[in-house]
Amino acid sequence: MDHDYAQSPVPPAARGSTPRFWNLYAGEHAAGTEFMIGPLFIAAGVGARDLLLGLLLGNLFAVLTWRTLTMPVAAEWRLTLYRQLEIVAGKKFVTVYNLANALLFCALAGAMVTVSATAVGVVVPIPMPELNEFWPTGAGWIVVVAIIGALFTLFAAIGYEWVARVANWCAPLLMVGFLACGLTALPKLGVHNFGDFTRLAGEIWSGGDPLPGQTKFTFWHVFFFSWCCNAAMHFGMADLSILRFAKSRAAGWAPAGGMYLGHYMAWVAASLLYAVQLRADPTNTAVLPGPLAYNAIGIFGLLCVIVAGWTTANPTIYRAGLAVHALHPTSSRFLVTCAVGVVVTIIGMFPVIAMRLLDFVGLYGTILAPVGALLAVDHFIVRKGQAAPESPARSHGTWMFYAAWLGALALCAIPLTHGVFASFLTVPAWLLCGSLFLVLYKIVPARQN
Image (cartoon, rainbow, N blue to C red; front, side, top):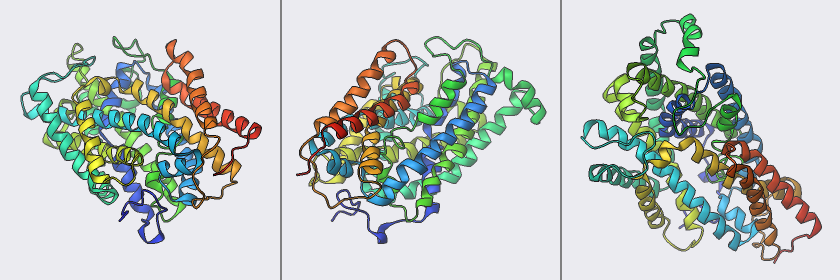
């Protein structure tokens, strides 16, 4: 029985209330990535005003994209991204997309396994990675990552109900943990009231030169990064797989819980932890969430890092499992997700993705987000907002989808190879893909089987 409705619309009886989606997004986005991204902002030499204003506006744009773009499509079709793409673009296109999608999801989840492993490394004596580390740091590191990856995979493989349940359990803990980390760090930086903060913010986020190997961040870097770091989920519509379970379209505002309680507050709090570390020892540039949180709030900090990695890896592995399962719908989704978890765990053994997370997240969104433009054009313009899940899958004209997606990526690859920050290219790639597809559709109307 298709308990997760991987191939069919979610029926009314299986839909959840809006509050659980606020918990889900808060838990997912107050997560392991936040312990990495906050310190990496300081490593990128961002200034205080650029950071605080850029996060405010960038996260607002992200929430609006979820609500106005992804939620209407999810509420109308009630299908996973993969099943909807199969209907709109054809099975072969979905196969190509799913391979890219699953690999990138695995890489992101693997980075979260890396983050959680740094917390275990505080208790278990294993060599920890440096800021620019690439390879696994030893046998102990590999064993710890393997154990964490297996546990994360188990909960993701059980299914959506456990993904949502884990988020509901952990969201309050993570909110308290990040807030505690920030409040503990402030006195160590000489901040005892709001006046101190406004006076010392320029020292905490100095706006100076970035650390070796890092990109210099300005307001626009922060704005586009915070808007597009989840572009695969909103612009790319991967969150159709989650929001299709919502009873009300009001759930489309739920990402605000993740963007402001998670991204804004958590990124700032994690930045403060790194600022404390650099003030104590300017030569210690390692970005290790476990030691950072432990030095701030002790064992509770380690627990928060492990849980934070879990609540991000959990839905990410689940999404990757759906992507691979869509390639062979008659297979066991549980076993497919377990196989995906093996790949995630192996990737997690290599710390390079976690240490280069700002660049990876931008590239990840730029590759996957344009596919959402194909669905947006099909839904809002071609079908005029009406779903047609009973339609047969497309068998002709699929070349237009390849041409639009790959054409947009090819055009964006040119500035990318010249060092342009990947998050700057996400919105242009989405617009290019949608425009190319619409032009091709008008010139050569696709036929249905």
